[in-house]
Length: 215
Image 1 (cartoon, helix red, strand yellow):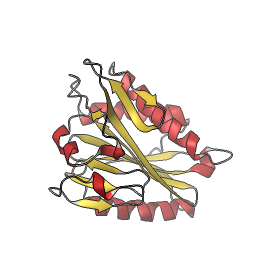
Image 2: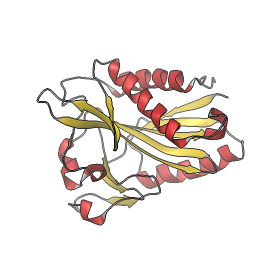
Image 3: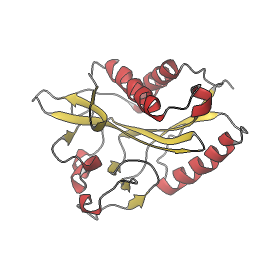
């Protein structure tokens, strides 16, 4: 199996992205189209996952979208690279394994961060990828939220390149109040969307051992 890679240069409205994914997942399940990774950015907004606690929404300054992905509240906006991954887990694994899938997503992020000399780490009980900042604080640099339908996974990951970190103060990110959020820019690393897309694509294809659809 091979996977299609789609990149959007303009901000994509959140409802449009969800509608696209829903249709694509249905077609992947019917085996009418190949799996896909879609790299994009959203305008500034909050999303609430299936475990979201209403008390964790601290501000009404941005639009809020309730979505079917796992997890709690998160922020999306310019400067944050999102990869929506639509993947038939029955084709990737002999026995579909959501925990292994999440681990592989984490690994693809960790390997990509490493290419920019950022050490991303897992933390037990805390979804996402974390870094230890120069001041010793642990902060999240990438979030993960997935949904699975008929063993086809969708939604995916977000990586903070240069977003407005102040926007995260309007929520309790992923329900975790004792740790903050960071970004490439916050860590003093300058990276373009294109540069990170290129690195992440190679890491993803390597971790999942998938060829890129040509043409």
